[in-house]
Length: 404
Image 1 (tube, rainbow, N blue to C red):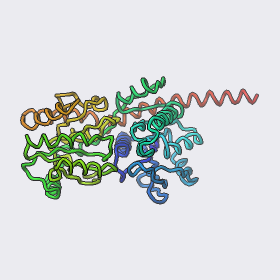
Image 2: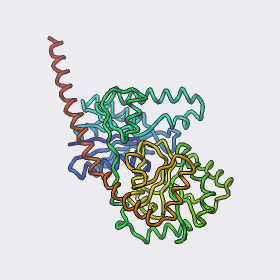
Image 3: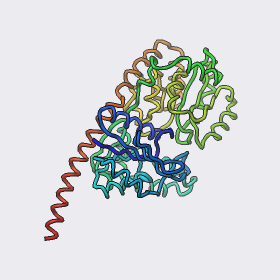
Image 4: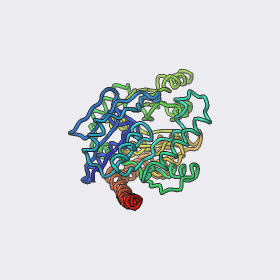
Protein backbone atom coordinates (compact mmCIF):
# COMPACT_ATOMS: atom_id res chain seq x y z
CA UNK A 1 0.00 0.00 0.00
CA UNK A 2 1.18 3.55 -0.77
CA UNK A 3 0.31 5.86 2.12
CA UNK A 4 0.60 9.63 2.51
CA UNK A 5 0.93 11.07 6.02
CA UNK A 6 0.04 14.77 6.22
CA UNK A 7 1.01 16.66 9.40
CA UNK A 8 1.88 20.19 10.52
CA UNK A 9 4.61 18.74 12.75
CA UNK A 10 7.33 16.21 12.03
CA UNK A 11 10.95 15.74 13.23
CA UNK A 12 13.17 17.58 13.88
CA UNK A 13 10.23 19.40 15.52
CA UNK A 14 9.36 17.54 18.74
CA UNK A 15 5.86 17.13 20.16
CA UNK A 16 3.32 14.35 20.60
CA UNK A 17 1.91 14.58 17.07
CA UNK A 18 5.37 14.64 15.51
CA UNK A 19 6.32 11.53 17.48
CA UNK A 20 3.08 9.80 16.55
CA UNK A 21 3.56 10.41 12.82
CA UNK A 22 7.19 9.32 12.93
CA UNK A 23 6.30 6.11 14.78
CA UNK A 24 3.50 5.37 12.32
CA UNK A 25 5.84 5.92 9.36
CA UNK A 26 8.42 3.54 10.81
CA UNK A 27 5.80 0.95 11.72
CA UNK A 28 4.15 1.01 8.30
CA UNK A 29 7.50 0.72 6.54
CA UNK A 30 8.46 -2.14 8.84
CA UNK A 31 5.43 -4.18 7.71
CA UNK A 32 6.10 -3.50 4.03
CA UNK A 33 4.21 -0.34 3.02
CA UNK A 34 5.55 2.65 1.07
CA UNK A 35 5.13 5.79 3.17
CA UNK A 36 5.36 9.46 2.16
CA UNK A 37 5.16 12.51 4.44
CA UNK A 38 3.93 16.04 3.74
CA UNK A 39 4.69 18.57 6.48
CA UNK A 40 5.65 22.20 7.20
CA UNK A 41 9.15 23.65 6.83
CA UNK A 42 10.25 26.79 8.75
CA UNK A 43 12.03 28.14 5.68
CA UNK A 44 11.80 27.13 2.03
CA UNK A 45 10.22 24.39 -0.03
CA UNK A 46 12.16 21.16 0.49
CA UNK A 47 11.82 17.59 -0.78
CA UNK A 48 14.07 14.68 0.13
CA UNK A 49 13.34 11.84 -2.25
CA UNK A 50 15.50 9.42 -0.25
CA UNK A 51 13.25 9.65 2.82
CA UNK A 52 10.03 10.59 1.00
CA UNK A 53 9.46 13.76 3.08
CA UNK A 54 8.04 16.87 1.41
CA UNK A 55 8.23 20.12 3.42
CA UNK A 56 6.16 23.19 2.53
CA UNK A 57 6.90 26.69 3.98
CA UNK A 58 4.70 27.73 6.92
CA UNK A 59 4.09 30.74 9.16
CA UNK A 60 4.10 30.92 12.97
CA UNK A 61 0.75 30.44 14.69
CA UNK A 62 1.54 31.85 18.12
CA UNK A 63 1.09 28.40 19.70
CA UNK A 64 4.56 27.21 20.79
CA UNK A 65 6.66 26.69 17.64
CA UNK A 66 3.76 25.44 15.51
CA UNK A 67 3.54 26.64 11.95
CA UNK A 68 0.65 26.50 9.51
CA UNK A 69 0.79 26.76 5.76
CA UNK A 70 -1.64 28.38 3.39
CA UNK A 71 0.78 27.85 0.50
CA UNK A 72 0.00 24.85 -1.67
CA UNK A 73 2.59 24.98 -4.51
CA UNK A 74 1.76 23.41 -7.85
CA UNK A 75 5.19 21.76 -7.63
CA UNK A 76 4.16 20.05 -4.36
CA UNK A 77 0.92 18.80 -5.87
CA UNK A 78 2.84 17.37 -8.83
CA UNK A 79 5.23 15.51 -6.51
CA UNK A 80 2.33 14.07 -4.50
CA UNK A 81 0.59 12.98 -7.69
CA UNK A 82 3.72 11.10 -8.72
CA UNK A 83 3.56 9.08 -5.49
CA UNK A 84 0.31 7.39 -6.67
CA UNK A 85 -1.10 7.18 -3.17
CA UNK A 86 -3.77 4.67 -2.18
CA UNK A 87 -4.80 6.60 0.92
CA UNK A 88 -4.07 9.88 2.70
CA UNK A 89 -3.82 9.93 6.49
CA UNK A 90 -4.06 13.42 7.99
CA UNK A 91 -2.86 14.33 11.47
CA UNK A 92 -3.98 17.94 11.57
CA UNK A 93 -7.32 19.59 10.88
CA UNK A 94 -5.94 22.81 9.37
CA UNK A 95 -2.92 24.00 7.35
CA UNK A 96 -1.47 20.80 5.90
CA UNK A 97 -4.81 19.15 6.64
CA UNK A 98 -6.53 21.58 4.28
CA UNK A 99 -3.90 20.86 1.65
CA UNK A 100 -4.54 17.13 2.10
CA UNK A 101 -8.27 17.62 1.39
CA UNK A 102 -7.47 19.60 -1.77
CA UNK A 103 -5.07 16.91 -3.01
CA UNK A 104 -7.43 14.08 -2.08
CA UNK A 105 -10.30 15.67 -3.98
CA UNK A 106 -8.20 16.31 -7.09
CA UNK A 107 -6.65 12.84 -7.13
CA UNK A 108 -9.75 10.97 -5.90
CA UNK A 109 -8.00 9.50 -2.83
CA UNK A 110 -9.80 8.61 0.45
CA UNK A 111 -8.79 10.49 3.61
CA UNK A 112 -8.31 8.89 7.02
CA UNK A 113 -7.85 11.31 9.92
CA UNK A 114 -6.41 10.98 13.44
CA UNK A 115 -7.61 13.55 15.96
CA UNK A 116 -4.67 14.40 18.24
CA UNK A 117 -5.32 17.80 19.82
CA UNK A 118 -8.04 19.04 22.20
CA UNK A 119 -8.25 22.46 20.52
CA UNK A 120 -10.62 23.91 23.09
CA UNK A 121 -7.78 23.74 25.64
CA UNK A 122 -5.37 25.69 23.42
CA UNK A 123 -7.48 28.57 22.10
CA UNK A 124 -6.28 30.92 24.88
CA UNK A 125 -2.87 31.06 23.19
CA UNK A 126 -4.53 32.74 20.20
CA UNK A 127 -7.22 34.82 21.94
CA UNK A 128 -4.98 35.75 24.92
CA UNK A 129 -7.84 34.95 27.31
CA UNK A 130 -10.50 37.01 25.51
CA UNK A 131 -13.76 35.56 24.18
CA UNK A 132 -13.05 32.26 25.92
CA UNK A 133 -16.54 30.77 25.52
CA UNK A 134 -16.90 31.90 21.91
CA UNK A 135 -13.43 30.69 20.92
CA UNK A 136 -14.07 27.27 22.47
CA UNK A 137 -17.33 26.92 20.57
CA UNK A 138 -15.56 27.97 17.37
CA UNK A 139 -12.85 25.33 17.93
CA UNK A 140 -15.56 22.76 18.61
CA UNK A 141 -17.43 23.67 15.41
CA UNK A 142 -14.32 23.45 13.24
CA UNK A 143 -13.32 20.12 14.78
CA UNK A 144 -16.79 18.66 14.26
CA UNK A 145 -16.92 19.89 10.67
CA UNK A 146 -13.50 18.54 9.72
CA UNK A 147 -13.78 15.20 11.50
CA UNK A 148 -17.37 14.47 10.61
CA UNK A 149 -17.81 15.92 7.14
CA UNK A 150 -14.49 15.91 5.29
CA UNK A 151 -12.86 12.53 6.00
CA UNK A 152 -13.71 8.94 5.13
CA UNK A 153 -12.62 7.33 8.42
CA UNK A 154 -11.81 8.84 11.81
CA UNK A 155 -9.24 7.58 14.35
CA UNK A 156 -8.78 8.68 17.97
CA UNK A 157 -6.04 7.49 20.37
CA UNK A 158 -8.12 6.97 23.53
CA UNK A 159 -11.58 6.30 24.93
CA UNK A 160 -11.52 9.83 26.37
CA UNK A 161 -11.37 11.31 22.87
CA UNK A 162 -13.94 8.80 21.60
CA UNK A 163 -16.37 9.93 24.32
CA UNK A 164 -15.68 13.57 23.40
CA UNK A 165 -16.92 12.97 19.86
CA UNK A 166 -19.81 10.72 20.79
CA UNK A 167 -21.15 12.45 23.90
CA UNK A 168 -20.15 16.12 23.65
CA UNK A 169 -19.93 16.60 19.89
CA UNK A 170 -22.69 14.07 19.21
CA UNK A 171 -20.96 12.66 16.11
CA UNK A 172 -22.79 9.58 14.84
CA UNK A 173 -20.15 8.23 12.48
CA UNK A 174 -17.82 5.30 13.20
CA UNK A 175 -14.84 6.29 15.34
CA UNK A 176 -11.86 3.91 15.55
CA UNK A 177 -9.77 3.83 18.75
CA UNK A 178 -6.10 3.19 17.95
CA UNK A 179 -3.48 4.09 20.58
CA UNK A 180 -0.35 5.71 19.18
CA UNK A 181 2.63 3.37 19.00
CA UNK A 182 6.06 3.99 20.46
CA UNK A 183 9.44 2.56 19.48
CA UNK A 184 9.63 1.01 22.94
CA UNK A 185 12.92 -0.79 22.31
CA UNK A 186 14.77 2.54 22.29
CA UNK A 187 13.79 3.10 25.93
CA UNK A 188 14.62 -0.35 27.33
CA UNK A 189 17.45 -0.46 29.86
CA UNK A 190 19.52 -2.88 27.81
CA UNK A 191 19.60 -0.45 24.88
CA UNK A 192 20.75 2.55 26.91
CA UNK A 193 24.36 3.68 27.20
CA UNK A 194 24.84 4.21 30.94
CA UNK A 195 27.76 6.59 30.30
CA UNK A 196 25.45 8.91 28.34
CA UNK A 197 22.98 8.92 31.22
CA UNK A 198 25.74 9.67 33.72
CA UNK A 199 26.97 12.53 31.53
CA UNK A 200 23.50 14.09 31.58
CA UNK A 201 23.28 13.71 35.36
CA UNK A 202 26.64 15.42 35.78
CA UNK A 203 25.63 18.26 33.47
CA UNK A 204 22.44 18.78 35.49
CA UNK A 205 24.29 18.62 38.79
CA UNK A 206 22.49 15.49 40.00
CA UNK A 207 24.11 13.23 42.59
CA UNK A 208 23.79 9.45 42.89
CA UNK A 209 21.91 9.93 46.15
CA UNK A 210 19.28 12.25 44.61
CA UNK A 211 15.72 10.99 44.26
CA UNK A 212 14.57 12.45 40.95
CA UNK A 213 11.08 13.30 39.71
CA UNK A 214 10.85 13.90 35.94
CA UNK A 215 8.41 15.70 33.64
CA UNK A 216 8.81 15.76 29.85
CA UNK A 217 6.61 17.91 27.65
CA UNK A 218 5.63 21.39 26.55
CA UNK A 219 5.73 24.02 29.25
CA UNK A 220 2.15 25.23 28.89
CA UNK A 221 -0.48 26.22 31.42
CA UNK A 222 -2.64 23.26 30.39
CA UNK A 223 0.09 20.81 31.49
CA UNK A 224 -0.60 21.75 35.14
CA UNK A 225 3.07 21.66 36.16
CA UNK A 226 2.08 24.19 38.85
CA UNK A 227 0.51 21.31 40.77
CA UNK A 228 3.81 19.42 40.96
CA UNK A 229 5.74 22.54 41.99
CA UNK A 230 3.21 23.60 44.63
CA UNK A 231 3.51 20.18 46.27
CA UNK A 232 7.28 19.92 45.99
CA UNK A 233 8.25 21.76 49.18
CA UNK A 234 6.20 19.54 51.46
CA UNK A 235 7.60 16.39 49.82
CA UNK A 236 11.11 17.77 50.15
CA UNK A 237 10.69 17.84 53.94
CA UNK A 238 10.12 14.09 53.87
CA UNK A 239 12.57 13.29 51.05
CA UNK A 240 15.68 15.44 51.69
CA UNK A 241 17.38 14.37 48.44
CA UNK A 242 14.35 15.15 46.23
CA UNK A 243 14.96 16.86 42.87
CA UNK A 244 12.57 17.74 40.03
CA UNK A 245 13.83 17.81 36.42
CA UNK A 246 11.60 19.50 33.82
CA UNK A 247 12.44 18.64 30.20
CA UNK A 248 10.90 20.90 27.58
CA UNK A 249 10.20 24.48 26.58
CA UNK A 250 7.16 26.69 26.22
CA UNK A 251 5.38 29.97 27.00
CA UNK A 252 4.68 29.09 30.64
CA UNK A 253 8.37 28.95 31.60
CA UNK A 254 8.49 32.41 33.22
CA UNK A 255 5.40 31.68 35.31
CA UNK A 256 6.89 28.38 36.49
CA UNK A 257 10.10 30.18 37.48
CA UNK A 258 8.02 32.67 39.49
CA UNK A 259 6.40 29.77 41.37
CA UNK A 260 9.83 28.27 42.06
CA UNK A 261 11.10 31.59 43.45
CA UNK A 262 7.99 32.00 45.58
CA UNK A 263 8.32 28.46 46.96
CA UNK A 264 12.09 28.93 47.45
CA UNK A 265 12.91 25.67 45.65
CA UNK A 266 15.16 27.04 42.91
CA UNK A 267 18.07 24.82 44.02
CA UNK A 268 16.03 21.64 43.62
CA UNK A 269 14.15 22.24 40.35
CA UNK A 270 16.11 21.93 37.10
CA UNK A 271 14.98 23.11 33.65
CA UNK A 272 16.78 21.47 30.74
CA UNK A 273 15.13 23.38 27.91
CA UNK A 274 14.15 21.64 24.68
CA UNK A 275 15.88 18.28 24.16
CA UNK A 276 16.33 16.40 20.90
CA UNK A 277 13.98 13.45 20.55
CA UNK A 278 16.93 11.08 20.12
CA UNK A 279 18.06 12.00 23.65
CA UNK A 280 14.69 11.50 25.38
CA UNK A 281 15.39 7.82 26.30
CA UNK A 282 18.55 8.91 28.14
CA UNK A 283 16.65 11.59 30.05
CA UNK A 284 14.01 9.04 31.09
CA UNK A 285 16.77 7.01 32.71
CA UNK A 286 17.99 9.84 34.96
CA UNK A 287 14.75 9.65 36.94
CA UNK A 288 13.25 7.55 39.71
CA UNK A 289 9.62 8.55 39.01
CA UNK A 290 7.87 10.16 36.05
CA UNK A 291 5.15 12.64 37.07
CA UNK A 292 2.39 14.52 35.25
CA UNK A 293 -0.68 16.37 36.46
CA UNK A 294 -1.99 17.17 32.96
CA UNK A 295 -5.65 16.46 32.19
CA UNK A 296 -5.64 17.75 28.60
CA UNK A 297 -3.83 14.88 26.87
CA UNK A 298 -5.41 12.81 24.12
CA UNK A 299 -3.10 9.96 25.09
CA UNK A 300 0.13 11.02 26.80
CA UNK A 301 2.96 9.46 24.83
CA UNK A 302 5.61 10.51 27.35
CA UNK A 303 3.90 8.28 29.90
CA UNK A 304 4.36 5.23 27.64
CA UNK A 305 7.97 6.25 26.97
CA UNK A 306 8.69 6.50 30.70
CA UNK A 307 7.07 3.10 31.31
CA UNK A 308 9.23 1.62 28.53
CA UNK A 309 12.23 2.93 30.46
CA UNK A 310 11.09 1.00 33.58
CA UNK A 311 9.98 4.15 35.37
CA UNK A 312 6.96 4.18 37.69
CA UNK A 313 4.46 6.82 36.55
CA UNK A 314 2.45 8.95 38.96
CA UNK A 315 -0.21 10.80 36.98
CA UNK A 316 -3.54 12.59 37.26
CA UNK A 317 -6.56 10.30 37.28
CA UNK A 318 -7.57 11.21 33.74
CA UNK A 319 -9.25 9.10 31.04
CA UNK A 320 -6.35 9.75 28.65
CA UNK A 321 -4.05 7.63 30.81
CA UNK A 322 -6.47 4.84 31.67
CA UNK A 323 -5.91 3.08 28.36
CA UNK A 324 -2.29 2.61 29.39
CA UNK A 325 -2.15 2.43 33.18
CA UNK A 326 -3.82 0.11 35.66
CA UNK A 327 -3.72 1.86 39.02
CA UNK A 328 -1.43 0.15 41.52
CA UNK A 329 -0.18 -2.34 38.96
CA UNK A 330 2.01 -0.48 36.45
CA UNK A 331 1.49 3.11 37.63
CA UNK A 332 -0.35 5.22 40.19
CA UNK A 333 -3.21 7.72 39.79
CA UNK A 334 -4.05 10.68 42.00
CA UNK A 335 -7.13 12.89 42.32
CA UNK A 336 -5.78 15.43 44.80
CA UNK A 337 -2.67 16.69 46.60
CA UNK A 338 -2.95 14.16 49.41
CA UNK A 339 -3.05 11.20 47.01
CA UNK A 340 -0.20 12.62 44.93
CA UNK A 341 2.08 12.96 47.97
CA UNK A 342 1.07 9.53 49.26
CA UNK A 343 2.01 7.92 45.91
CA UNK A 344 5.41 9.61 45.74
CA UNK A 345 6.23 8.66 49.33
CA UNK A 346 5.02 5.09 48.84
CA UNK A 347 7.37 4.64 45.86
CA UNK A 348 10.23 6.33 47.71
CA UNK A 349 9.96 4.31 50.91
CA UNK A 350 8.97 0.92 49.49
CA UNK A 351 11.76 -0.10 47.09
CA UNK A 352 10.25 -3.54 46.49
CA UNK A 353 6.92 -1.97 45.49
CA UNK A 354 8.73 0.50 43.20
CA UNK A 355 10.60 -2.32 41.45
CA UNK A 356 7.40 -4.32 40.99
CA UNK A 357 5.65 -1.33 39.41
CA UNK A 358 8.69 -0.72 37.18
CA UNK A 359 8.77 -4.29 35.85
CA UNK A 360 5.06 -4.31 35.08
CA UNK A 361 5.33 -0.87 33.44
CA UNK A 362 7.74 -2.26 30.85
CA UNK A 363 5.50 -5.25 30.14
CA UNK A 364 2.50 -2.96 29.68
CA UNK A 365 4.37 -0.54 27.41
CA UNK A 366 5.32 -3.37 25.05
CA UNK A 367 1.67 -3.55 23.95
CA UNK A 368 2.12 -0.14 22.34
CA UNK A 369 4.89 -1.04 19.89
CA UNK A 370 4.98 0.55 16.44
CA UNK A 371 4.09 -2.61 14.51
CA UNK A 372 0.82 -3.07 16.41
CA UNK A 373 0.06 0.61 15.78
CA UNK A 374 0.76 0.27 12.06
CA UNK A 375 -1.28 -2.93 11.62
CA UNK A 376 -4.31 -1.35 13.31
CA UNK A 377 -4.03 1.74 11.10
CA UNK A 378 -3.72 -0.46 8.01
CA UNK A 379 -7.07 -2.12 8.80
CA UNK A 380 -8.72 1.31 8.84
CA UNK A 381 -7.02 2.20 5.53
CA UNK A 382 -8.53 -0.92 3.97
CA UNK A 383 -12.00 0.12 5.13
CA UNK A 384 -11.51 3.63 3.74
CA UNK A 385 -10.21 2.42 0.37
CA UNK A 386 -12.88 -0.24 -0.06
CA UNK A 387 -15.78 2.04 0.80
CA UNK A 388 -14.36 4.94 -1.19
CA UNK A 389 -13.88 2.91 -4.37
CA UNK A 390 -17.39 1.52 -4.15
CA UNK A 391 -18.79 5.00 -3.68
CA UNK A 392 -16.73 6.38 -6.56
CA UNK A 393 -18.01 3.70 -8.95
CA UNK A 394 -21.63 4.42 -7.99
CA UNK A 395 -21.11 8.16 -8.51
CA UNK A 396 -19.56 7.55 -11.94
CA UNK A 397 -22.52 5.39 -12.98
CA UNK A 398 -24.95 8.09 -11.81
CA UNK A 399 -23.10 10.69 -13.88
CA UNK A 400 -23.29 8.47 -16.98
CA UNK A 401 -27.07 8.08 -16.61
CA UNK A 402 -27.49 11.82 -16.02
CA UNK A 403 -25.73 12.54 -19.32
CA UNK A 404 -28.11 10.22 -21.13
